[in-house]
Image (cartoon, rainbow, N blue to C red; front, side, top):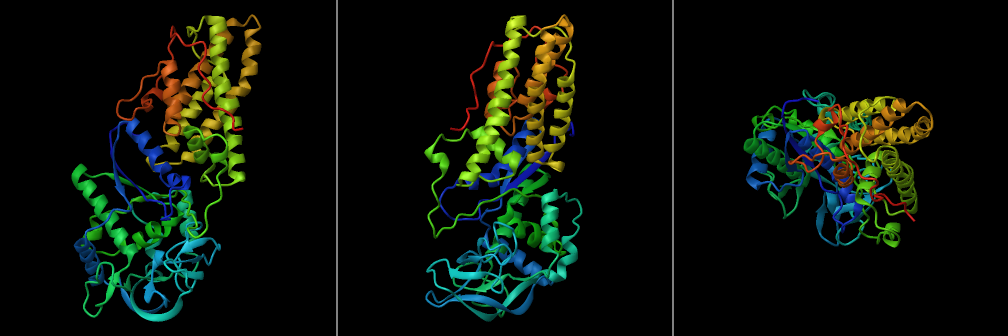
Amino acid sequence: MSTHAMSYVITSGPAVSAAGPHPGQSSALLGADVLERHLRRSGHRVRHAGHGTAPRPERVQRLFRLLAEAGAWQEREVTVFRCGPCSRFLQETEVRGRCWSCAARCDGMSCPACGRPQDANGLTAPRCAACGAAPTRIQRRRLVLPLEERRAHLGTHPGERRPPALRRYLSEVVSGTLPAVPVSCEGVQGIPVPSAGWEGQVIADWFGELAGYAEAVGESEVSGGPAQVVDFAGPGRAFLHAVLRPALASVNTPDTAEHPLPQGALTPHLIVDETVPPPASPSTETTPPNTDALRFHLCLTGSVPERSAAFEREYAETVSTVLAHGLDAWTDTVLDLLAEDFGSVVPGAAPHGPPAAERRELVRRTRKALAAETFSPQEAAEALATTVDRAVADLRQLRLLGGTELRSAYEARLVAHAELLAACAVTAAPLMPDWSVFLAGHLGIPLDEESGIPPWSAAETDRLVPPGTKLPESVPVYFHERP
């Protein structure tokens, strides 16, 4: 990780559904939140630009016109949906149905489950989102973005780094024939197409969203200076930001050249069927989830908080094995031994033994996992889970040493456990900020003023709990098992 302060713009899109609040919506922003906390506590400057920024109509039309002059659009007859009862053509979120690829519920733009593009030729069981009627399919004249002709530009983008999930997604999407995506549609609401002969047609919503995104990123860089852009888009936004945006950015126009392609990172969204009331969440009938425990579980598993018994079981298992019987039990044992044998004062021995090596490995893995270039909250969570599991397993050997004449070895190993525990509080801070602040306060680890969590620099120091530090005999249990 660079020791020089850098400037970042983090973008993250909203949930794809317009339904009421649902815990799945927060998971779309979790990755961006974790990265922001880590970058801030590492001394970097961080700004935000939202995918949903409403663009100025004149800016949208100007960009549309520039792309048209550069040859980005083609005129074609395409299949579209029309709702008879509503007497209107349906586009994107105005039509609902089933994904042609995975059969998940989706709208007419892209599937939130698998990220595949949808159109009137592929969407199955379509219904008008306003009245519920089945629309008809007819041929109409449209301006389109022919993705097949821009296939080569989807493979490589200079300066852009892609995580494995994004590479897999793009590989799957480009394995088949790429669609011609309408960029205009007939309608009375929207931004008019600024081209002669296209009166009565408006610019497609997806293009307006991309124009708003580019405007927000551009304005952020104007106000804060050049920055590395890190883009988060879940499967519901993946096609828009991982396929359509690169395809347009490759068109050589002055406007798109001003906005370099951001790197992409996939995080999961969850769409809720708005026509059927969601089932009751098990968590509303039992104990509300611990926020940090839920954050950790989502990072560890890459899942979203579904309203299902299966999710509740998996979440309860993470809380029990990694957090309650792992992290909390380990903390309790280390503080107990320090209290019993050293009056809760950290002894002067240098840390030694397997826990000392575990600390170095934890810092190394977390450093890589939370860097913007190689960001993977799942890898960071797995590093912590592995560390906790090995530390708990080593407690038996630690107790055996304490019952022998090898006092110096016992002392060094116990100090190594205390250092490793403190390192967990530092490295896990972006994933579990409240727990980190809680334990750091008890261990005497200072907090970063900017981020409010332990600074990353603390993880790189030789000793987090120096000799002579007075620690508490115990701390309150933080993670409670799910009933």
